Amino acid sequence: MLRLQDRGVSLCDGITRRDWLRIGGLGLGGLSLASLLSAAEQRRGGKAKSVIVLMLNGGPPQHESWDPKPEAPAEVRGEFGAISSKTPGLKVGELMPRTAQWTDRIAVLRAVVTGDNAHSSSGYQMLTGIPHLPLNRESAIPKPPNNWPSMGGVVRALIDDRGQLPAAVTLPEHIWNDGNFPWPGQDAGLLGRHVDPWLIHCQPQEDRFDVPGLKLLDDMSTARLQQRQRLVDQMNGQLDRLVRSRSVQHLDTYTQKAFDLLTGGAARRAFKMSEEPQRVRERYGMTRYGQSALLARRLVEAGVSLVQVNWSRIKGYENQGGWDTHKKHAHSLKTHLMPALDQIYTALLEDLEQRGLLDETLVLWYGEFGHTPKVNRNAGRDHWGNCFSIALAGGGVRGGSVHGVSDQQAAFPIDGQVAPRDVIATVFHCLGYEPNAEVRDQFNRPIRISRGRVIDEIL
Image 1 (cartoon, rainbow, N blue to C red):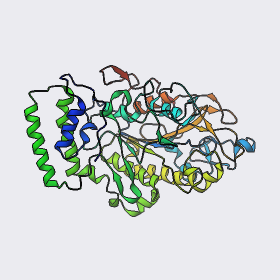
Image 2 (spheres, rainbow, N blue to C red):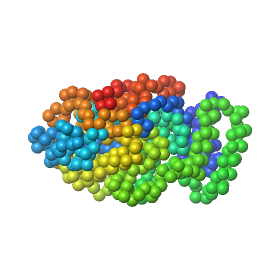
Image 3 (tube, rainbow, N blue to C red):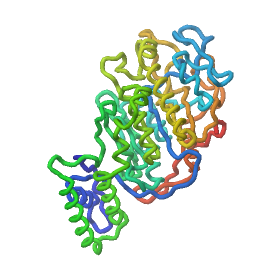
Image 4 (tube, rainbow, N blue to C red):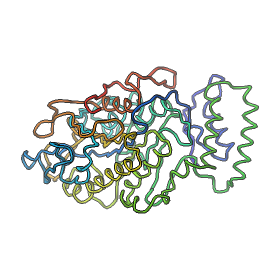
């Protein structure tokens, strides 16, 4: 059973939201989606209908991906060269042969800057667009003043959850530092828990999911669940005359959506990975991240507006199988990281293209920072937030474009510098929202969805 985590904010009649959510949860035998499903405020047209964020936490290195420096000294260049791409004049790292054939659909940003070299705080800035206070704070925890909403939280506040699934989903796990310190900036923050992105812990390569609301208690049959729903309907009918607040008025709607998830249809099918042809699954790779990317495509098809796919650690691999390559950097890239990402990224783009979805789905190659210009004494590269690269594909961007120029070591910007707030402003622009659009926080205060500028050069 998913437990409700609520701060007990009182409604106008003195009854806490926790009490009301407990009523909904008990009434449906532990059904707990009422705290996760909420109405959003508005929907506007845009080139992109959905966003998939491939979050490569640990930091994909700019030198071996989008900004190779083949003429630099060996300690900067690294062990790998550069290859030509489908875009004339654009070279990418040699470990990206498949991606090189898709650059006509990709826009590259080569001068992204956070000015922060800590995973947690630089990651917070990339996810929210707001610099962490203070910068360079490792194992930072989510608390004020560093509680601005993630892109997923803002999406849920903007877009009406009209379907059976919420507007924003995160999988296959949250992002955390050693010691299980979750990064700040992964939830809805000051907008309130009711618009948190769904966090789905899953092993989609094994068809195992911990999906909020999609599991009955062991002793709860469908017939008993339906009886509980009728009881809740009767209870709500009697309570209508007592409470008229917006939160409680919407509670019935949220509970019905939760019930629909348990008993129905399209939402549940999105998680049935076995329905995919085996050749499609194998194209992504039968790994946790590969199948999570495939699940992201299925969720987009089911109506989810933003899916964030976090790179998860893998036991038995150097650097825990992640992008935090402080040692044996080249070995990790060559034997695991880049081949896997090259396969997964292009499988996703190809799959979306074949289904007619790429033009309306924005795909982000993302991370919290890049890596140091010089290889360290452990044959690794360290954290670097002073200049790094990300990429955007589909969903309204101009393929084959490159914005930003770094110096000869890919260490600092020379031209076209952008900040995370600009990237986020561009994402929302592609979804049809300008940076000055507003959502409301828990106290009904207006909050701008972005403080950045739209990067028109790649649109």
